[in-house]
Each structure stands twice: as structure tokens, then as C-alpha cells.
Length: 298
Ligand SMILES: C[S@@+](CC[C@H](N)C(=O)[O-])C[C@H]1O[C@@H](n2cnc3c(N)ncnc32)[C@H](O)[C@@H]1O
Image (tube, rainbow, N blue to C red):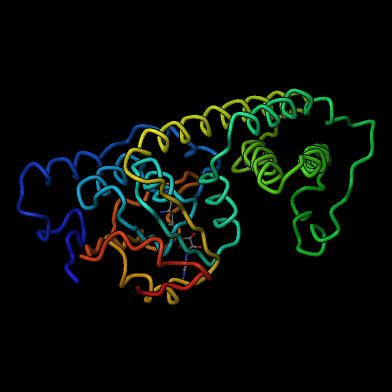
């Protein structure tokens, strides 16, 4: 195993000046995260997609397999897929797995049209005069703790109604997309706020997030299709510990970690600037990997 980048600020950077320059420029990029499906959820301490893209392009080839054992919101998975690499991500947080899975699920035009139809009707489903389904496990798991205050109960009801509507979307992948629209809107409405939006604001935001996410999903599919000349690649999101990925890392071209520490300061999400990257020689083994969630060599 050869450690290519241990820390972008250390002296162990690759000797190639051009490479060095490109990586440092990408790591220093402070532009807001945008593009593809990256903004389906604002995961804490997420990578800059530009940095991830630079690393993947510089240290792997189309068709390679990449592993991110601490995938979080799946920045690595989205970029890898868009660049024609196979990718496995693992995380112990089921929210991370949900988000990364939705962000890397490719939807065809028919499915996107169904989501669009749902989204246009969605604001009407949010109605304070109608009842909502109270998801029993929310209360059991303590989710109501901050949602039943005078200034938030309407948002809790709006979220329940929007979620109920998403669960009526046909297939599991459409339902997951719809749930992610509601999740992203709920994050916008509740996270780190001193004052909360009105129900009207929530309705508007639902449709705006749905529209942006539909166009993000289109952009990801277009990027994947543009690589189809090589081979169709795939992403797998696994709800498991990094400690269980040793077997995969024997097969990967890149094993790539952000540090698994939340770096949220002052209520604002910080991007993780550091990374460890291992370059492995074995490539093009996707078909022999993950039939049953376990790698095997052929
Ligand atoms: C900083 S976040 C990763 C963010 C990610 N790079 C992105 O761009 O969205 C670190 C992640 O590591 C996960 N994590 C922490 N300990 C873990 C472990 N032992 N195995 C797998 N994941 C773990 C956390 O749940 C968290 O989602």
C-alpha cells in the first residue's frame, strides 16, 4: 500500500508540481457546494466536491473501484459515479446511508416525471386544517423534542403531511427521493435557525427543493451516461463500520477517508480539509465484488 496523500498541508505531497498545485487549489476552493446531487442534503463536515473530483481524476482511472469507509453524505460516491468509477461507501449512520443512496440512485425520465407531478401537487398536501399521520416511532425516538413547541408544531405537521404524501409515491426509489425532498426542506426549515419559516414558506421551499433535486438527478444521470463508452459503473452504500471494510480495501484503486470527526463550529458546517488516500494497484474487479455484500476475488 502506498500512501499518496497523508495530509494536504504536510511535506508528504506528491513531488509532481502540477499535481501538487491542482490538489492544493481544489482543497482551498471555498465556493459553495453545488452541482449534481450534492445538495440533496447538507451533511456536516462534508468534502468539497471539487477536491474529491481532483483526487479521483488524479489517482484513479475510469472503471476503477473506490472506497470511502466514512462516506457521510456521499460526496465521494457522487463524484466517483459521475467520473465513471465504481464506488463503495460505508457509514455507521443510517441517515448517511439513506442520503448517499438517494444521491447515487439513477432515475429515468419516466421516474423523474412522476416525481415532478408529485412535487407540483405537494404544496396542496400541506394543510393545517387537515389531520396528519403521526409517525409513532418519531415520538418514541425523541424526534418531537424540538418539534412540538409553539413556533415549530406547524412545521412538524407540515413535515408529517409531506412525508405521508411521499410514501404514496410508487416504487421504493421514488419514495426515497420524495422522503429526501422532505428531509432537505425540513433541514432548511429547522437546522440552526433562530426564527422559523411560515407554513407558506415551507410549502414554497418544498417545491423549490424538489425542482432543484430533480435537475440534480438529471445532471448526475447525464454525467454517468457520458461515461457509458467505458462501462456502466455503480455505487453501493453500506450501513456498516469502517472496521468491516478491510476486505474491500484489498480490491480498491483508492481507499479514501475523511476524518470521522464532526467539525461543526459556531453553528456553521465546516468542510473537512484533510484526507488520507491510499492507492492500490488492483483494478476492474467490480463484478467480483459485492454479490452478497462481501468481496471475493476471481
Ligand atoms: C465527516 S463525515 C464524512 C463526510 C463525507 N466525507 C461527505 O463528504 O459527506 C464522517 C462520517 O464518518 C462516519 N463514521 C464515524 N465512525 C465510523 C465508523 N467506525 N465506521 C463507519 N463510519 C463512521 C460518521 O457517521 C460520519 O458520517
